[in-house]
Length: 205
Image (cartoon, rainbow, N blue to C red; front, side):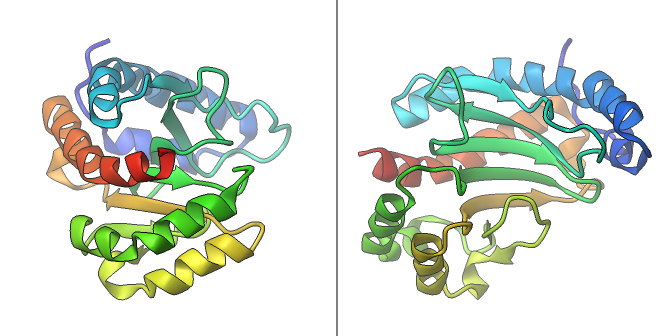
């Protein structure tokens, strides 16, 4: 399918009760759009990062009762999986779309990544826009603007707390015009990941 953007109907999928019904909506409304986005963005992400990028679309296969509160796609240099590696994400909750460079708790060497970012903390502050947001838990909606967060404290927590995470990127509301056009959204995603790519490259060195 050609990607024409996201609609209110996509976000409304998370208002549907029941695992099977919500998963059916995610599979029919959102996952085809993720597939189309992956086809548009993968090559550019490879150019930005210097790594092959494989698309992973969340299947929520382990769920047996509770329906997912969000869904996402990931771009990762590892073909088999993404959770144990730095990766880029695009996904939806019911009230916003997120774009992340993500370092989540499954990383086997979180301390290494945290120490690398702490060493480059001034570079992060200088190169990443202040209105980009940071999350310390990918399962929660909460995020704090880079300009408002104690970055050293957040990275130290990421280093020392087993379940702590570090995700940096953007939130976009469902009514934002950039979501209504496939071309505008792809441009937005490319610009966002272009700004995050230096952090990815630092962490992969």
